[in-house]
Length: 106
Image (cartoon, rainbow, N blue to C red; front, side):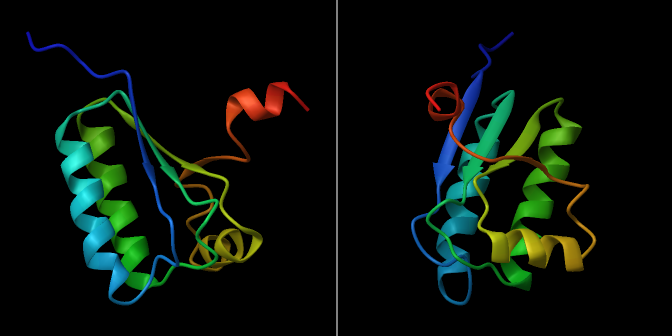
């Protein structure tokens, strides 16, 4: 049996919308293909996401669930949380406010 990666992190460094979505979709799909037990998509530097970005995250979430893994959104901005809530996806995605190491130091 192949070795499982315990955790992988994709750090989105810009608005997750428009032309940037394809680039991030490829990176997230490549990371999901590694079959980590937990995939963290760090959104702290992303002030917004659009419908195409939501579709990318949902696809990654479904794949992770199918393979026994988990997708977590780290540090989504207030606006991103609002978008997810309006789309009724706030209970679909696991979210965490900050890097666990940072949270322990506060």
